[in-house]
Amino acid sequence: MNKKDKRREQILKASFEAVAHKGFSEVTLQDIASYAEVSKGVTNYYFKNKEDVLSHLLYWITTKIHENEKTAINKETDAINKLKAYVNSAFASPDKNRKFYQVYLEFLAQANNNKKFRDINYLFYQNCWKLGREIVQVGQEEGVFSIKVDIEKAAISIRSIIDGCLIQWMMRNDDTLHSFYKNNCFDIIKRYLTNPELHD
Image 1: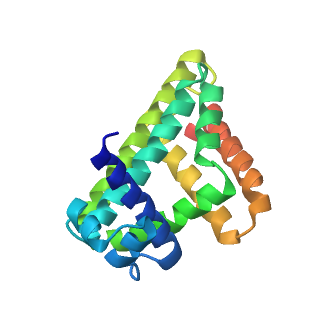
Image 2: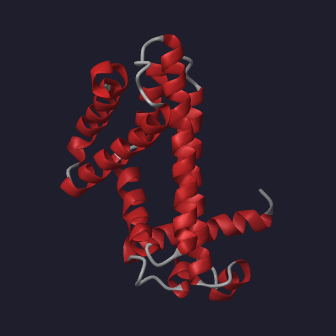
Image 3: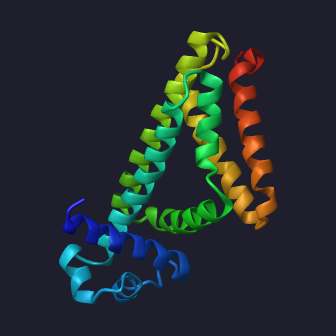
């Protein structure tokens, strides 16, 4: 990255920490500048206003999540291991998942009244569904996933199950349950994709 990109990423990382600690509504440009250890003027140089910083933050964190998941999936060749890699990447660690969802849920709470946030989030889901489609298609070609599975519905369902399991884990506030939810998430998705009776 060039100097400008490095500075922008520094500010985005700081805004992530600021939102995680203070919440979306309470965080200010001055807070973001303080977390980044720069002046407020520097923040204003790279971003128009608070909404601009946070819009870029939402795009940045969701893009990072997608890139990590895509990389993990592409390292595997068969469908079951691709699915396992997808779930394992989504369940990165208790600390990373908690911090991400603390910030992500703040954005979702604002999205109803913010089209830009909705558009960025929809792009994130489109990327997630693309990963899901790839996994299901490979599994059907291998004969390990039922041919009765509708690929489009499955792609949406896979991400819904992952997010649902992660949010429920987070709400229980118990790090020891992280592995349970990760393993349960994988088992649920695998059963859904391999059992033809679920798709009659």
